[in-house]
Each structure stands twice: as structure tokens, then as C-alpha cells.
Amino acid sequence: GLDGTHTAARADWMVPTQVTYSEIYLNADFCVQPPGHSAARKGIVDSLVAGCVPVLFRGPVAPGVASPWDQRDLWPWHWPGQRLSSIEISADDLERRGLRAILESVSERQLRAMRRAIREQAPGLLWPLSRKDARPTVANALGIAMHHLGHLALAPPAARGCDAAALRGG
Image (cartoon, rainbow, N blue to C red; front, side, top):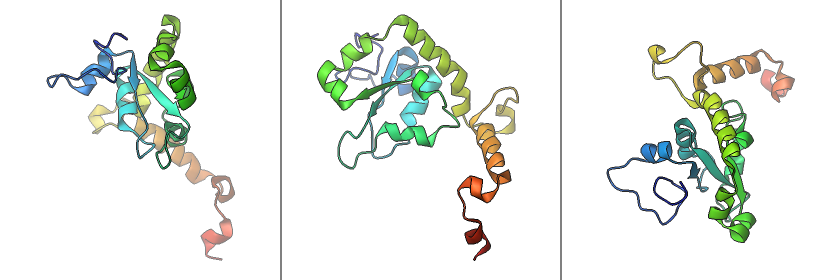
């Protein structure tokens, strides 16, 4: 909840040493994922796999700091419903309303809908470690990537954004 007992959304909440981040994500409604030096942030995938709604910050937060907004370009195959399964906050919203007010404005109905979208898409973010881990009836990250790469390989060079003359060396 938002009282800080089982949520990663409170900055002043200290994580006990015997608790792992995955346990926190499993018990949280929202998982705040501030931008870092890279748009690809492991914590976002971890929170989605645990069923926790990631809270992302759109737009540049500081000069030279990547924004999670860029992640839309990183995972469109694996997380096509990003807007349905995350909360995006601008720096202006954060300053004007505050994180707590923004998260408290999410209704239980909206939260259930986001979690349903996460349940549907989370398997597409997981990479099987072996053939026995891969379930043929569930799309995983490897299968999704191979599907899209296969379509790209079969597409004519112009459709892939390639210059055919450059490919021939001319």
C-alpha cells in the first residue's frame, strides 16, 4: 500500500536486509523506476514480471540522463502495451502534484486493468534458460524476437531501411 509498509514507491522507506527487491515488487502496487544512465532498466522488467505497475518518468529529467520515454523504442515487440500497464509521470506533474497524490489518484479499477495487461505481457519479457524452460504455448522473449527477426530477414532491403546498393557494395 501507499503507507510504505510494502511498497517501493516511498523514498523514505528503508529496505530490511533480509528482504529482496523481488519480494518488495511482489507485494507492491507501484514500483517507481527513476531514469538512469541507460533507457534499458532491469528494474522495469523485474517489476512487470512480479506484477507491479512500473512508474516511469517521461521527458528529460536532467541533461545527459536517459529517460524511460526512450524505452518505448527498446521493447515494442516485448512490451507493446506499455501505456496500458504503466504510469508515466512528467517532471512538471511530479513537482506540481507530488508522487503520492498521483499514485493515490489511480482507482482500483485502473490498477486491476493495468495488472491484467501486465499478466498478459509479462511472459514476453522472459528469456528461457533452456529448452525445458520454454513452453510452446506461451510466447517468451526469445520466441518473440525470433518471430520479428524472421519477418525482417524476409523483407526486401528497402522495407528494412537498407540501401540495396550499399548492401551490394556499390
